[in-house]
Length: 369
Ligand SMILES: Cc1cc2nc3c(=O)[nH]c(=O)nc-3n(C[C@H](O)[C@H](O)[C@H](O)COP(=O)(O)OP(=O)(O)OC[C@H]3O[C@@H](n4cnc5c(N)ncnc54)[C@H](O)[C@@H]3O)c2cc1C
Image 1 (cartoon, protein in one colour):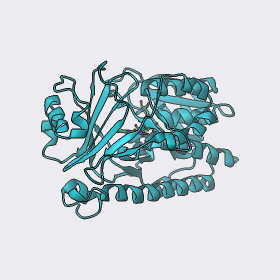
Image 2 (image 1 turned 180 degrees about the vertical axis):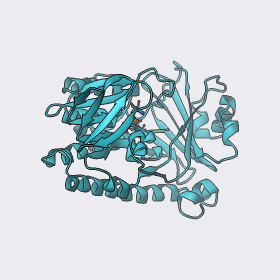
Image 3 (image 1 turned 60 degrees about the vertical axis):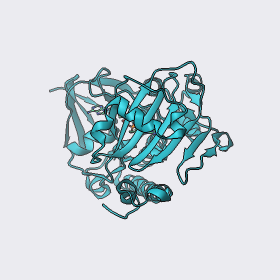
Image 4 (image 1 turned 90 degrees about the vertical axis):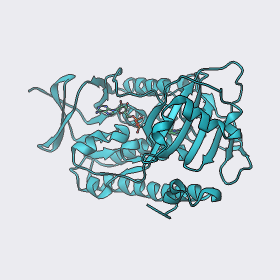
């Protein structure tokens, strides 16, 4: 089989992979692989928010001007019933980094991919499984879309929660909980002018609802995968009825819907750091593939961009494009992000005192397994 040589192969062109390709592309030969666009595995994205602090990371990727006119909507206030039944308002306008945005995720990902290609990276859509091998000092990737074998000293897993490459290398990924998100997109309603993000707690999970840039309203409930109610809540009318018991949500929700309920794993998960450290030189995992956040943190995309920036810095620091010492420094940085995140997450879940004894909440504050 013929082969193609690259300096880096990045698998996954979501925010993490594309951001890394933007950073490495100008100086290196970068191959960016993603699943073919119309994959049946691809669920509609929920519609995420991005904090204002991400602006500096987007600027480093190039294309920030494009981002500003791409239809992402500035975040308005968040109103939450979390610590008590009293609604608490938080106005993102007071954030010194700016209010941040509700993203049009399809557009956001497409623009970052385009920026990666403009920065010199080659993007190939793959169909079917990848084969990943290590031999003669380089990584080798075979896929059905490319007739030749792709080789590079650097291999980056940016495949999101699936961590496809890491799993192929036998690196374990530890799920820290069984959080699952049920969500549906309600059709745009001209009478719905509410711009706030509404967040509230329930006995067996937590809710949020917000209008996304398409004008649709997302309604999302987060509960444990082993919750006996999960099956029933996959029926749209049941999910909506449960949400409408809560006054903060009833105000903005319709009385009926036929929209399908989507289900996504949403819990915290982390790649085994020791196993990554033991893997052959030049392997990195960025974004959700390395560390996936609970959506209550609203940190996933920021982390995708920030971990790509850290990996780019580590790669640039090493003369041979992936020396172990610079990877160790990267892994240490990711460890400290993880420790800080775990501490904050526990405090967040400890706050709703009224539900502390219920399994969903007790599990998250260490009172039960
Ligand atoms: C319910 C929910 C709500 C969320 N809300 C927020 C929020 O408000 N704010 C926030 O910042 N984050 C939020 N997140 C997290 C956010 O969606 C992720 O953190 C973010 O998408 C991670 O980016 P990534 O590039 O690491 O992975 P992904 O976005 O998952 O991208 C992975 C890429 O890899 C590709 N890929 C996968 N497998 C293969 C393969 N075998 N071969 C080739 N390519 C492959 C995929 O096609 C995709 O393009 C939320 C997550 C969930 C589940």
